[in-house]
Length: 307
Image (cartoon, rainbow, N blue to C red):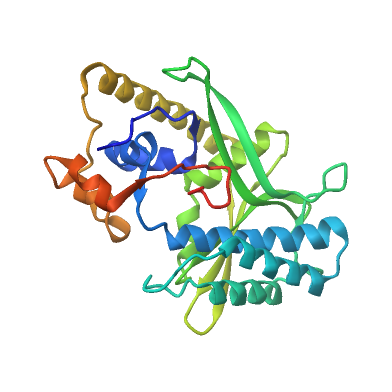
């Protein structure tokens, strides 16, 4: 049986993107809160890597700890974050050892003392590392009546050539010549820039650093993408329309058990296939839940969003 469906109190880019891709996918993932029985190695690896960067940067830029010691603390943080996570048979290069070596390679590529991007320093001297935000929306939660919230987190609020930027790292298996193009219209970074400006940080755009995880080496790429005011306004208007549609679908579901719309197209097969494909292939999807899915609590403000 499905867990009881609930309308989420927090909207983030993953929910918005899933809903735009296929409303039924968003329903299963964020309203019913289903996830694979096996947690995602990709999310866990990304969370561990981000944790290592955070600890290293805060130690060096915030506490004045030496570079080598700050990097050692970052490595220890990765090990602690990783825990007893079993990666046997995951079919990827993403392991604890690979995460540690990528962390080491990162600070060889971008040395702490000489990195051309520095974290923004708050008036109290704390570095702008791991920036979290929560913005109230002018749309009420359909059950509680409280304002819905758009929330998220990014790796760093950085300064480059006297301009503020959202800075975020992305791990990938390949960093081709066109790797950076995917970020120029990405709603994730438009939302980050909108949120930063809402908190009076005049960011000019986002800098995305790619970390390529090959079997025997780590490669790097960097892409700068800009977000003028008109793009932020278009993004916000689209966000509100998407959230209003979520509320509409939810009210239809609660009133008449009408299911959320299906994409029945590319969303079913993209990126290795939708994780809920087997549910949509069955006339009785609830029969598949216990063997393949578990209730998952998605937290967009956590480094490991599956937490």
